[in-house]
Image: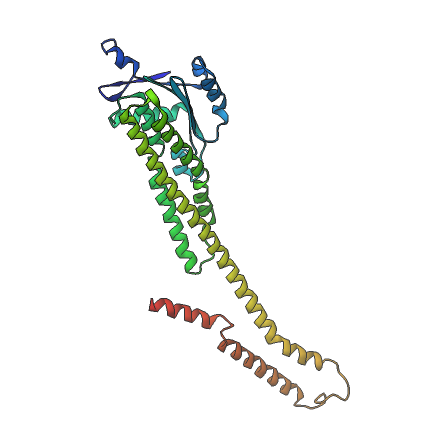
Amino acid sequence: MHSWHIEDGKLARGTATAETSADMQLQRIDVLAPDEGQHLQRNRTIDEMLRQLPHAAAPFVELYAGGAAGVLIVPHDQEERSAHGSEGRLSRTAFVLEPNTLHLMGDVELCERALSFIEREAIPVTHAAAVLCELMRFTVRDHPAALSLVRRDFEQLEERLLEGRTRVDRAKMMSDVRRLLGLDTFYQGMSDIAAELAEGGGGLVSDGGRLRFRSLERQLDRLATRLESLQDYSLQLHSLYEEGIDIRQNSIMQLLTVIATIFMPLTFITSWYGMNFHNMAMIRASWGYPLVVVVCVLLAFAEVLYFHRRGWLGSRRKKRTKHRRGKR
């Protein structure tokens, strides 16, 4: 078990000393392993929360007489995500909040990082509920920058697609999309916890703590709004990517159709004179073969010229596109 306590409005490591006042000694924060939290099973709410901890999929909180119990779930491990670009693992932390005590169980590493950060930065905290609020804020402190990076990747992808490049980094695109998966549930659950403790915390949360939780709720709502816009953006990029593939396939089919159309009359001529009837015209003429060759070449040239003027060969369409981009 690792312990912290509140001293002079700030978080301090270890258990309060004997010189500390009795009221101050009660303001303590304990980080426990899941098995060490079994002694907290003093009512049905805490017992149910501990049983749901290994399988919980969304953050939640339940109030009971004299306290609150819930689970915090961070869908992405920040260090693993930045190092490997993957989804990482779910970090589950159960909490039991009482008027002067906060017990944390589950992901001990995450709890210690958060509490050490609060201690190192000397963030003002006067109550156990304030520590819980700052711990929740710690879990989303890197999210604005991470969402900005995802948006930058999407903008770069959009530029490549608008330039007509169909070979894009699909792995990076899907990695960014996976970053967004599950965050909507995370933001909604964390916002519900902040709202529940701000509105119905009773004696657990002071007036200053209510303001903290309301501020955290607004921050989570802003993150949820940015997440929603990024999800819409990703759908638009996916549609743009699929549209580019369809256009490229249509161009290929158009080119193949033009080639087949050019060779169709030539095939007809060769098939017609391949019948080898004795009374066919120009069969025995010395100039017959050269004449047919000249006619086939002129016919193919005329078709190519016609298709080129209609813009069906693609070269003229590319020149027009470049000319329009140059004007811009």
